[in-house]
Image (cartoon, rainbow, N blue to C red):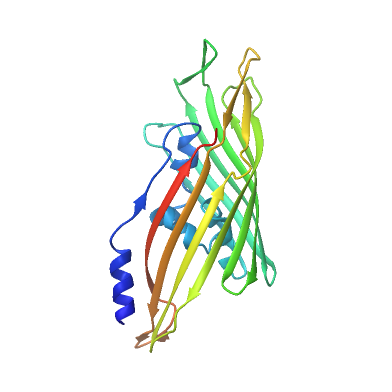
Length: 261
């Protein structure tokens, strides 16, 4: 019990964070998150995992899916972008005992807008911006308690109605480790640690303006580290009997991010 109290106190002290908050596609890479549960946990989900949407922060988190899962979420608008819309859909399945595979789509549209972009000395109005990402993910368990995962992403960005969307390929990778702690009477607890790197391939995207001129942007290279502590206890309900799945968790995280180039 003393260990639980110490860990709970340390994790309740808050979080330490540093972030890259300007540059290419901040609203996508740092804004909209896949769903309410993942967003509520913030960057700590890099150490939690267990759902399809976990791949957004740490692809290794897919290793916590026991059989299969379908995930769908949507939200609108995005702050002052009143005509915007965001949706996420994904499916994951354990294909063999140690391997989970998943496919997911992130889609963010800003709708009608008065924004413009500069290419050289010329300004071009953005008609209906579209950011989307198609990810094929795989997570494995080479050792007990250790999960390794990768996202293979096709990232697309469209600014103008009369110009085809630009696209680029990039890869994310991550690790998640589950540390078992000796259970006490009627109490189960463990800790999890996660680390991930988004776009470790250092990919760029090259896009065209309506007049055919081109510009290029680096996709942000994002590193995250997170730690989470879970504990749960059995509850004896008069009608249902002993309920073993109720648990409570506290999470603390620190994360960092930076842009290549």
